[in-house]
Length: 259
Ligand code: HEC
Image (cartoon, rainbow, N blue to C red):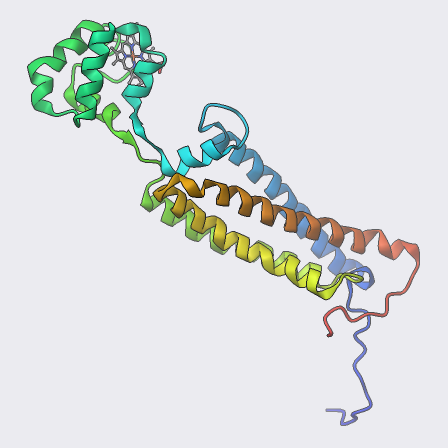
């Protein structure tokens, strides 16, 4: 039966984090714990994959550039000839190889005189040691002469949409919980729940920009720091208001969702 009485104001003054009952606080807390652990694991994974892209531990602008933009100045073979394969051929032979690689590693030249250079210097290992590419075959050499193009458009499209969908949900639930907090200026609150979505979009956009030009790698770092910071504040304030505030035996007569 509907109650027709304009004086009867629904009592929603309990609608704030410290006043929630045990069940809903437990639900929110379980979610925040799991998502917090997920964020730590994600950070570890970023450090282990992107963090090592430039050969040094720790995330730097170079890591972002190598991961998304690649290193168009260098093919794998060139990097190796300046690195661990440095002493495997004379400077003259290395130069021959590099010139050929930069000319696009054509098969005609391979047959003419490049093959010999590899036969003299490289195949004593690169045809016998299991796991090493067999350099008696042109196809295998060709593989390592390709320039490093960074992330492919296909893989970027895949991770972009997964990233946006999945993380939007996380930010949405974080925001719902945090919207029930009390004692925080409503503009600050609105910014903390809204900005992570903007950072997320900018983050994914910056991957594509970085793929095109390395100048945008810093945007990836700044947006990542941006949403991590917002999420950390949301996480700690929500936990504090659910579990520490109520213990102070105060009543909070606030409807956190009302204007
Ligand atoms: C004494 C043995 C030996 C000789 C000679 C040798 N290599 Fe290697 N090469 C290796 C080993 C071992 C590795 C794997 C470890 C590494 O990457 O440093 C390797 C790796 C490489 C790789 C990376 C392969 C990949 O897919 O990761 C390239 C490219 C390469 N060598 C090029 C050359 C060239 C060009 C020459 C001749 C100028 C040469 N190597 C001569 C032992 C050799």
